[in-house]
Image 1 (tube, rainbow, N blue to C red):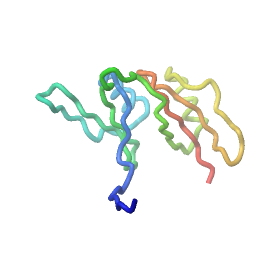
Image 2 (cartoon, one colour):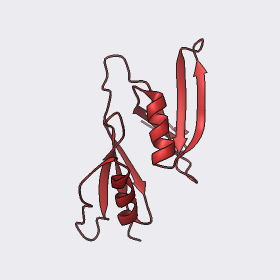
Image 3 (spheres, helix red, strand yellow):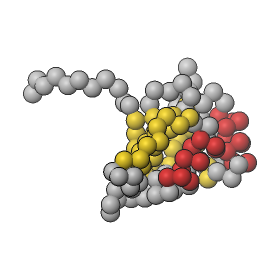
Length: 130
């Protein structure tokens, strides 16, 4: 097969958000993301929301769960930080559902921990070792 595709980037990833307002509040107020898109469509019955870490080109779309689909998932999303210890402590103090400890396996695996958003979607935060 020699089909040439025209894919240029990972533009966004979708995360189920049964309560889009609660999810939006968490990603903006707790994680510090910026709102990129918040639009209604389908005669105002549906809503499309995208949030993004400052300076990032890839956004997270907070979408209603698909009919019959899961209301939370292990997203596979990995967020980078410049200070994993500070972020872990800040999120834990804010009452966010985070792993009890930061995983430190040593090189080449960066230190990391997982957090869960209000719907139970898990994301991983790592401090890249460059």
